Image (cartoon, rainbow, N blue to C red; front, side, top):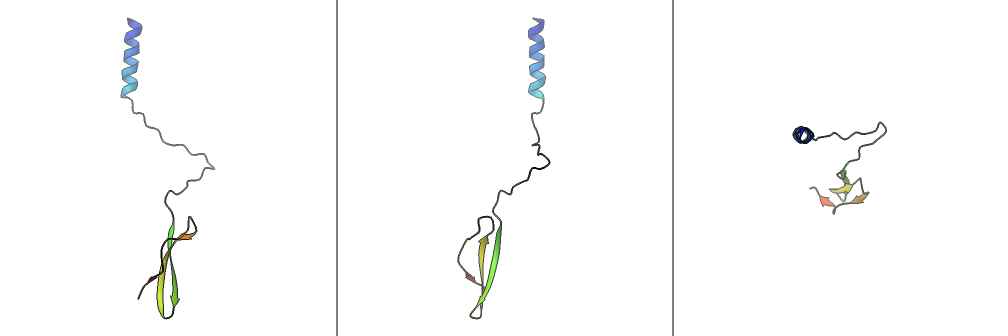
Length: 69
């Protein structure tokens, strides 16, 4: 009976304890970005400025040239 009560008490204490943990990174670990890095690129052609979105993470264009004037 005493062993059973001790087990119940330990279970209650552990159930009430917060179970959070912080991720531990090694000294040489790098944090990688989750979102793509985007950048506007500009050009001037035939007297009109244009802009276009470029994805630096995937190294590709993300849309058409948009006139700015």
